[in-house]
Length: 348
Image 1 (cartoon, rainbow, N blue to C red):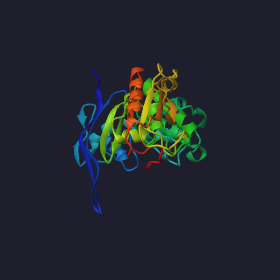
Image 2 (cartoon, rainbow, N blue to C red):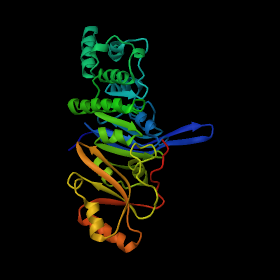
Image 3 (cartoon, one colour):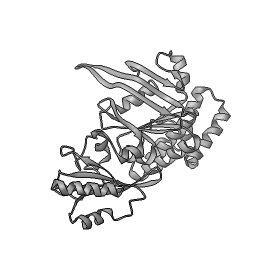
Image 4 (spheres, rainbow, N blue to C red):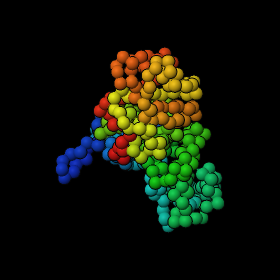
């Protein structure tokens, strides 16, 4: 049976503002298993950053429990809480390095606070520089490092305390796409080789696809959907999940056309069906064309997954025949409601 390293039970967080109480999180239940790379995704203002800060109690929940390694962190005094926090590291969007310290000095800092002997700490810091492929930049200051190099030093610093969990709060949002891919590959390697649990807060679906095995979708302070990344990609159940998985106006893959809002379906192809001309064969066999709105190919968990949004025939009878054809060929699809946004830029 899988072991839960983090459990949130009925977590609610309220803030008092001049305009009254604001509920940032509402009755959150969340279980994260040891070794997971668990993504929490939502649009701006959904509550995801508040959620990740409740895990290490940088934000104290108004109600509910936060349990780490079987022990409730909520209610602990500061001394006991700090002992548990040493096993939960965090990396941030803006890196949060100490500008007056060089790279190795930043990595040494948490070990100095923990009272690790100097020579032992220095040896460990040098090893961690190798882990993040920056042993040649040990004495460079943050102002001399690129964004990707700064984040690598921040990751090495997070590893210095031998954490069981690393919280990643929008850790790649300030980086270009190429650097983002390299940082995600490093985090994935740390997760797989060291068994460190990752909790990944992001608004970018590509980050979830490349790094995470599980995901929770948060909207207006509530978890609206959760599960295996591949399963939610295959068949998202909520509008919030579909909005995140469908292309938006900032996508590098532009919709092929945006002319119709009726009879739209999203198809999902796995490796068994991605190479077959199923749509072309359907058009020829049924004698009814379809309108192609969007298509792309993703890699989730090392396997290819394709998605396509098409507009079926206008008349109901032909459209039903097309759906039956797709079902017979083993193609997963969900219908897109006429009032659902498609191809429009969302609130990021």
